[in-house]
Length: 281
Image (tube, rainbow, N blue to C red; front, side, top):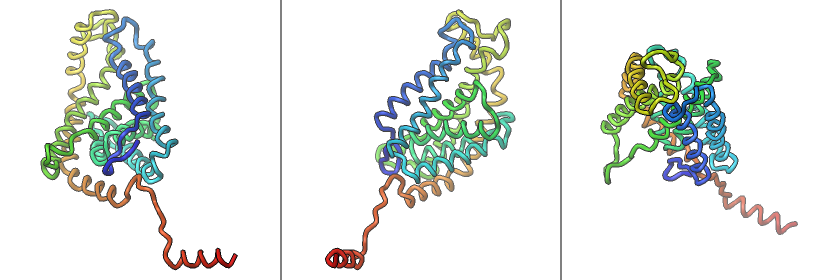
């Protein structure tokens, strides 16, 4: 992970790891449309994908591309996001974590958003004891949302997107992110949610269009009570907090000078004293 104008970007090794992990995890989400087996035979997708995703962070730290300040910042945001998530207990889709993830990714870039997303979900599971086969899906869903949020354009032509236009952009993306998270969670839940005997059930070996039709009906019939409140709540938080939070985060980024090497300049008197001591020796 390197930085350009204070925005974190992936290096070549991280891009390869991210691409492989995303392809494997995407296959884990989409397998019901391309296989006749049951979901229990497909959990190996995420046994591969999660170590790859966590390996991205390890690669960056081992290569010293993330300095101490950047790791500390990531830890602080992951802790805040993980602590906010259980406040709504997921009731009716109300999860206050998303606005922090979106705004942090907007400020520090796509790669920071991806790592923050997967880290936050993992830390949240540690806090709440929410370990299970769903955790891997949640980690990648949050990581992709952070990735997309950080990749949103900063300019339109030569015009910098700031002020009300940026808040509007964040609110629109908040709606998209909330609906996307619900869609991805339904993809991992649908194959075993309602058995195999209903008209909405996953049908192993059925044509892709048939299963896609069943899933779409299942998704809209079951998830709107969760996805719409999540979208409304996240959008309201973004509308109220985006100007102040983005300003504070950008001020922090400027003053902390992340990934800028710290250099100590010796004073003239100190250099003179050192030269005198060397002559005396």
